[in-house]
Length: 334
Image (tube, rainbow, N blue to C red; front, side, top):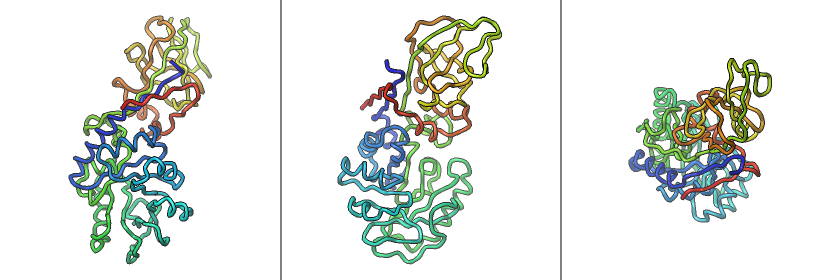
């Protein structure tokens, strides 16, 4: 094995897309594949999502869309972030999300700010001929459904006379648990990858994790009482303790604040101890194990949601920051 190996289960992406399509009850599923598919691989996951019933692809930038266009010459691709590169978008037959300024000769979706407090217009003007959609962005669908409902109602009232346009509001959390946010389409990202927008076990919402991350023990050593491992002597053995060194660190996306999370070593849960280094971390063992003993960082019941809770962050960040290094292999399961 290389230092570590990622496996992306594209069949799970397809099944997650199908789960979202069922949840949407007739509204279209638009697959969000920005940030390289949240670290899962934009092109492969886009294919799987479209196969699973998605009808459009959503990205953050024109550059991301241009990378997809050769692979998906006929797909509807929506650029959700602001851009000044309208000529490139027009040439590539992209659709743009805009606020107050509406460019000519390119299909646009006008974004209404109903409470996110970022991009978007505070008041909708009469739509021009190239306006094909109107949308808003929910701020709290995963954490405060009541405020999300306030946003939905603001949007509904503001767009009541625009039924001829495609109206889209829901993200993954709203698609799964906020039926009133469905409208005509939903822009879903995190749930496609089998990660819970609520930070809970994804199987609660019928989702299957897509990514697994594995490595192996590169070294085991016995610490005597009072000996330590890693920078700063953050872990000092209180008794004789076996530790295993795993050749993955924060340069690979295994963050420094993941100390105390658990991984599987030889199929058993083991605690990460000491400070996570740039290229390695240590796990506490109950015995000596041979070099090459398998380590599962994500997968086989170890959820990215667990690591996110330890790190005080969200799965979106952890997944998108797993770095691709020359010594790591990636496999795609179809």
